[in-house]
Length: 113
Length: 113
DNA sequence: CATGTATATACACTGACATGTATATATTGC
DNA sequence: GCAATATATACATGTCAGTGTATATACATG
Image: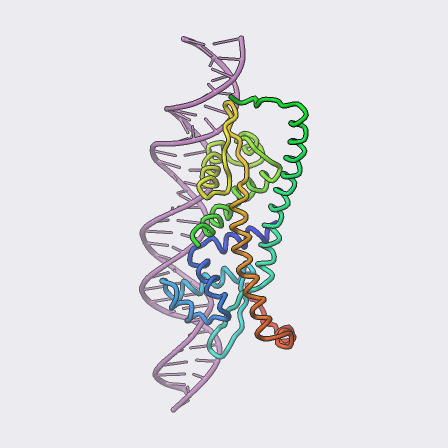
């Protein structure tokens, strides 16, 4: 779906990845993040806007600060998407098992040399 | 970790995302992918190299063709990484309890675009 | 060996994006 | 209102990644 690749693109940037990881500790003001990341404050604000537009973070005003925190829904989306691939291998294992059954009946060599 | 952001960056490209989705059906030759994606064959080969270097796909020669398929380990990595965020929310719920969740729902901040 | 097919690579180009500097906006305290 | 702090935005710049064209390599077939 469209939402998932938006989330991926947002998190694929190294700085935004670090920001998300840092937010595991809880709400973060912009200044807190600036201290942990080696870029200017303006850049952090831009990254936070991108993360916000992707639905990964939410903002809550607190005085003159803005407290950002992770949105669970975004990671639920990611988990559901990855889950789709897990089903893929489960299906392949089923087919592989069936193929083994057939091969046991008539042991054929591979077509590749 | 370093592996996970590499996987994210590889899958964040729209074309590579589509390639990965198409491979859910099983092994794909390069030509198969060229038919489904709106770019030149050379571009597909480059994307496949990036996916391969990220550990997302593996290659198996078959005559003059190269059959690419998904590697389960990469998606296990992704799942484990997302799982780390799920633990984050579980911890938060433990600390604050369901009462604060209700308060947060009543005073929900608005998101700008 | 010659031809066709399948895939990879070298090269140049272009557009997008992340960054820094500077400035605007908002909030608090005096 | 004024100064200080915190955050957002406008602008110019440089870099990087994806793309197409052209070519190289590998394999198959006759």
